[in-house]
Every structure is written in C-alpha cells, then in structure tokens.
Length: 104
Image (tube, rainbow, N blue to C red):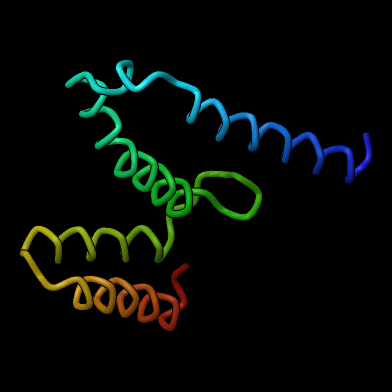
C-alpha cells in the first residue's frame, strides 16, 4: 500500500468513527456512568499525551531530562494553586534553565 492508500484508509476510518457517533441512539448516551466516563475522557487523553511527550525520546526510549523536571515544577505550581500563566512560565523556565546548564 502506498502513501495515498494509507491516507485514504485513514480518512475513511475517521469518517466512519464520526458517523458512528451520530448513529448511536441518544438513550445509550444518557446514563449517569456514561456521562461520567465521557466527562473524564479529555483529562485522561491529555494526561496520556503529557506522559508520552515527557518520558519518551526521539527513538521512543525512556528518557529522563529537563522535561520531567519542568512537569514536576508545573505540578507543584498547580498544587499551590498558582495561576495558569505562572504554571506555564515556571515549567518553561525550569526546562530552559536546566538545558542552559547542560542537562537535558
């Protein structure tokens, strides 16, 4: 299969997934447990993305570098109820400082 074939297959799968979401009867989505799961899904997906980007290097191996320290500082700032911009700047400054010092 060439590149265009893979693109077409991916497009068909994406379209079918979106279509399936519209075809599901509303009574299947109105349950309390279903609403709880759907409410938690964005947080879980974002956490998985952050973990993947924090712990994997270019070759897919486990890496401990400045990104891990930056996420740790950001989590600490969140626990201290800092404003979002402070969380972002603290994490970025931590990563930049550690990279400037030659780590990560």
